[in-house]
Image (tube, rainbow, N blue to C red):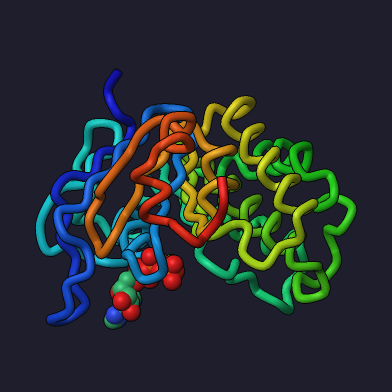
Length: 241
Ligand SMILES: Nc1ncnc2c1ncn2[C@@H]1O[C@H](COP(=O)(O)OP(=O)(O)OP(=O)(O)O)[C@@H](O)[C@H]1O
Ligand SMILES: [Mg+2]
């Protein structure tokens, strides 16, 4: 199977400070991939480089057969990659509906805006009920739903979400996890997400990649990683199997 997204030998630096060293990542079509690793490992940097917010010093990023590593963020959206940034980044004083609709800004998505909105509101009925509520009056979990809904409004083939579960209560984590699986199963959209809790992440994902100090040191099907001694070593103390 050809990977939908392939990151190869990616080096990324902030000025003189190199963060990613020959990083690798692959996503198969319609797969949920967990991007794991300790704080500061470079997970957000890798996601930001895929979406064009950061520039690579060397290496390649190929999406559906096309090199995208020189594209700015507004163009990677046009290629079919949506990026939900860490901490949601909603417009607090806009309504839920306006925040969601902003996701359809790109030329690919705009003509189909109403149709996509109907799909998105079927996935997230609560957002339909809260259409006219200001975003800053929603709970953290509801705001994360708005952020993901906004991502889907861009009609992506691949959705990237940086720490979707950060600070959420267990019930909300479960609900958003199920939504991500429905997005994969019903829309055929592939997903990459970043998460600190390895066990939680691997229960949800099909495949995991582990970054340590900017290098991809391990990847595999989630079920294998959950049993791996290497994974236990890396995250020792983070959780108990
Ligand atoms: N804009 C920036 N300028 C300079 N250094 C940065 C910048 N963004 C990130 N870094 C540094 O790059 C390294 C990797 O950061 P990054 O945010 O990619 O890690 P992360 O794996 O997402 O961490 P976390 O789990 O804490 O979110 C860190 O040492 C961080 O301080
Ligand atoms: Mg991060």
